[in-house]
Image 1 (cartoon, rainbow, N blue to C red):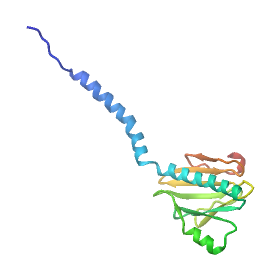
Image 2 (image 1 turned 90 degrees about the vertical axis):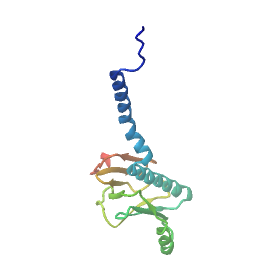
Image 3 (image 1 turned 120 degrees about the vertical axis):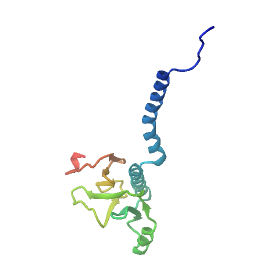
Image 4 (image 1 turned 180 degrees about the vertical axis):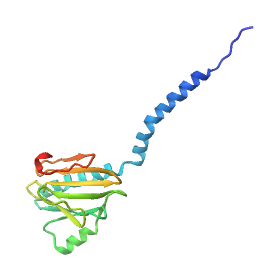
Length: 170
C-alpha cells in the first residue's frame, strides 16, 4: 500500500499566512490613504491650484486679484481688486472650504509679521507677480508649508512646518 497523503504541512501553511500578513501590512496603509484621502494634502493641492489660477487670471484679464482667508474657520474666497465693496461682500459668500479639521495655522508676507487670526490676503498683480507669502496649514499635529514666490509660477510645498526668517532661505 502506498503512503500517498496529499496536503500541506503546518510549516507551509504558516509561511503562506506570514507572507499574506506581510503583504497586508504594506498595502493597508496605502489603500486607507487612497480611499480616505489625506485632508492636509488635499488642502495643499486645493490652495496651490487656487494660487495658480488667480495668477493666470490676473495676467489674462489684466486685473489685480486678491485671495482672502478667514484664518479661524478654514475658508477663503477670491475677488478682483477693482470690485465695489458690495460685489466683494457678494464674493465673500462664495467661500471655498478646506477639508474638515484643516485650517491655516499662520501666514505671513515676507518681511511682515505672522498672522494667525482674523483675515489675511494675498494680492496677485496683473503683471504676473504675487506678494511673496508663506502659509502654514495644520491638521492635528501635522503641518504643511506653502511658499508662494513672487515671480515663479509654482508653489513650493513642504510636508512639515518650515519657518522662513527671510526670503533668501526659501
